[in-house]
Image 1 (cartoon, rainbow, N blue to C red):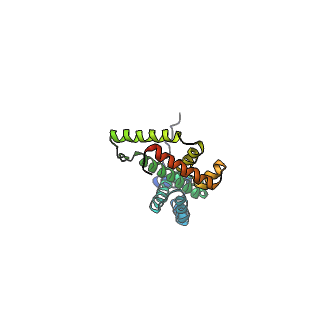
Image 2 (cartoon, rainbow, N blue to C red):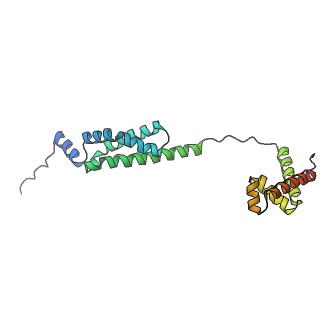
Length: 185
């Protein structure tokens, strides 16, 4: 049996040439980055809201494509890889921001005492009872005007009545509420 030939081991220089042949070159990547930096920055600006983040994203995109340049088989697609990386990094930055906002501690609202809460509830109950005691049109006008925050014209259009009628029903309804709630006139 003939002796097995040892496998040829490429020297360092040959190995480096093979890697560059399998992907885009550093020079091509750098030239593409320099030529399209402003357009990449503009792309990031459309996705993010502050300049510093846009610059960070574009620089990080260059670093990531540089470290994975052997996967860019066609040098003509280098710009496409850079663009896609900018989009992906922008999405990640937005996700981190949203998560950060969700995790921020929320200030505690000023808590009312139990007595204040009970008093507010009694006032609401009294107002609801007084509202139920109003004429139907007065109640409708007051609810639309003050609770739905509509203008007098919008209330008139919604109820199909004149602007003067809205004013009259509203005025009479408030007067009736004052009497029912025991407020001074």
